[in-house]
Length: 471
Ligand code: URP
Ligand code: ZN
Ligand code: ZN
Image (cartoon, rainbow, N blue to C red; front, side, top):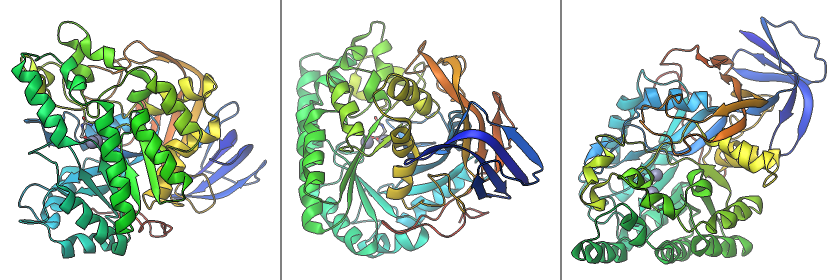
């Protein structure tokens, strides 16, 4: 199928030019002014932005966590992503205790199989290098397109690894071509604070934030940076929330060290006071690291503007408020950690970032598409509008007004973090490899069209096409 997208403002991380984009089959084959080509379908994009499909490098679909399982599986999560202009994501495949990485990957491939609407890859979340996965197996994963290892420095007795495991994985990554990702909070110290809070009878959601202070995020961030430096691996710090963590990342980057950080949409908008909302509503905002004091929101905008932080993800990890979050009604430690947001990232960052003058349109594309593609081995097939790239494209109407709400979103989650927020600017047509996924508010593709992507090693370009069948 050929497609001509005519006269839109084609926006990349570097440029914004009114042009036509010609898509032949799955890829972009021509970009130019007033292209003289025949196409099976022409989309008039005058007055619209033509953006690369966004990439979410941090999601948790169909993930067992906190005594339950995230409510969005690959189908509902990816439908939600597609409506929000996200055409590729990298989900966390969690190694269970005693499991090999191959066993964990088999489980995650099965979760996705037949349900996919957008392209996807997997990070491996390393939880055990003793009884299940071995260093040798970890080293072999980049050859299968699993080119990022995630380690949790928090969630004691659940996902947390000790520094020995973290450092060993970093040494493996230094040789295997993988990027190490860390959830940077000091889980041991948090565990002490949590026990003290419970002993004092503090059971409400707001104690989730009170027992995970920003200093413990800063300490773990700095520790990971120093360990990565000794191991010689590249490091990516996920869901950065506060000055205490931004500062060491900025300093490392100023030194030219191979360190990057992301923040997530919610940290710009939700602050610690949300957790104190009455009638257990605060539980909707329980995720880790927690929402911070409001002034950190300016720190984060400044960090993404100045490239101290290089990407914005969603950390979509959605649980129903009614029935899942309520598991922690009498004890905040039993509230499953995580929130929704896959669908809202582009609209929220466009409205409050670009429309309100905090970042440029180019920087928005960089943060939501190009940097995630470059850091996670997807570029230049994905993350930009260029000849030869996959035709993952969002025709975005910068004038369209929407009110974000759980009653309208496509996630199965029964609440929206941004309920009632009015935004101007929303996707109108979303294409995956030249195929229309979403048009004028309707899903027009069927599950199964999304493909597993074997990602390139860190720093290498992705040349291979997305696979037809998960493996
Ligand atoms: O609370 C969160 N963020 N849940 C998802 C797991 C993680 O830490 O990323
Ligand atoms: Zn995390
Ligand atoms: Zn996460």
